[in-house]
Amino acid sequence: MFEGLFGGGRNEAARLERMERKLDLILRHLGLATDGKVELSEEVRALAEANHMIAAIKALRAETGLGLAEAKAAIDAHRAARGL
Image (cartoon, rainbow, N blue to C red; front, side, top):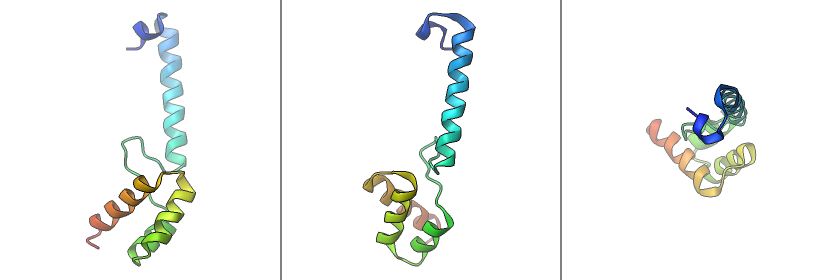
């Protein structure tokens, strides 16, 4: 898959795939899903469900390093999924 990109066979492709798996683990640990979906902590979910939007967005940004728009979108998506 990556052989042409790095010019050198299976060893480089395997190394790149290991690096991608590690990056995925780091992103999951930080609460950032690789599919664009953000996993909310219990604290952030509770704030969002109690309609404390600013506090929820602020907490999510502190936990994940997301930008304002991304954090707001994640909170809005969670609330919509819960019918709030």
